[in-house]
Image (cartoon, rainbow, N blue to C red; front, side, top):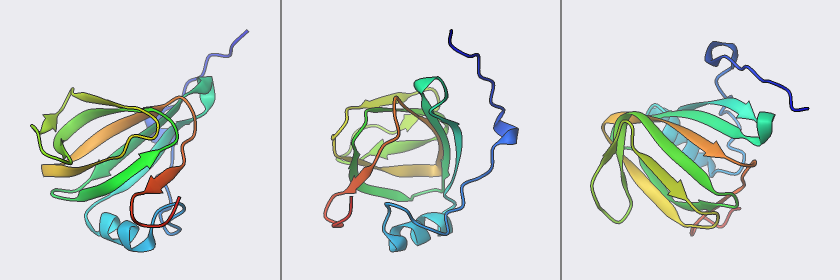
Length: 131
């Protein structure tokens, strides 16, 4: 029988971004300077990965893809997907297929969002030569 899991936001630690992991160091330094921070809320419990992320105003997330599908659900602020279109705001969601290349620019108030994934995901930075 499956186990009932409770994870409280206040119990989780903010990620230590001193090591960029799969991300280029320069990009992580720019992101942190622009107010980036994240907290893993679920790391496989219930077969779900859930991450809370904050990004500052005007920060641009360069084109990249992941090897797992994801849902981005905006809690506060907004973002505009690369290539134009309307800014998405609180309550809006994006469903991004595995392997799909995307990026976005944070709105004038920054953005706070959740990322849902069915599994841990690697990242491929388009043109950055890393995966």
